[in-house]
Image (cartoon, rainbow, N blue to C red):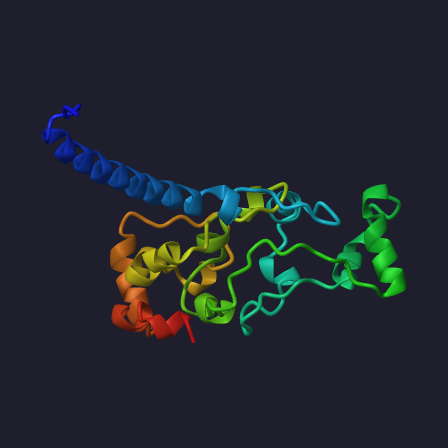
Length: 220
């Protein structure tokens, strides 16, 4: 039987297979990178449903509550702390006392059964994080959590993925601020931030970038 295809078609077939494999591999890699960084997986910029739709915009931006009023352990503990119901009732035993929206708060206070808040910022167990270290080393709340004073509902501002954390660990001078500005939601880095940041890094005894980016610093 006569040969239907020329011999050079063998080479063409091999090239086609290789090109197809490369397209699938590269396309799959790009797709994975996009998906991994998407809000679908990171939940960044996605408002989280809560038992009470607590508004930081109202309480922090409007009323001027300090972060530490509710998150009492943020300066001396790894965990910032979730306020007990009695903290809410310090005010709401006097204001909005008959609001239907706050009925779960009143019920929680009366029964002693805590509200089940949905965690917004939740690192994987293999990543070590300590709030007090960052706060006491000049990292402000808004650097990680965003402008919570402008959030009517709470969402995760940043991905909290390792590459995001490393942006600061590689260049801490870009985010360091005076300690009196840690809880100031309106703070903005000055024009000479890197110069002042380097001065603050010395003042706060910030470890070397080699140590800050070492695997064992966050994965213990």
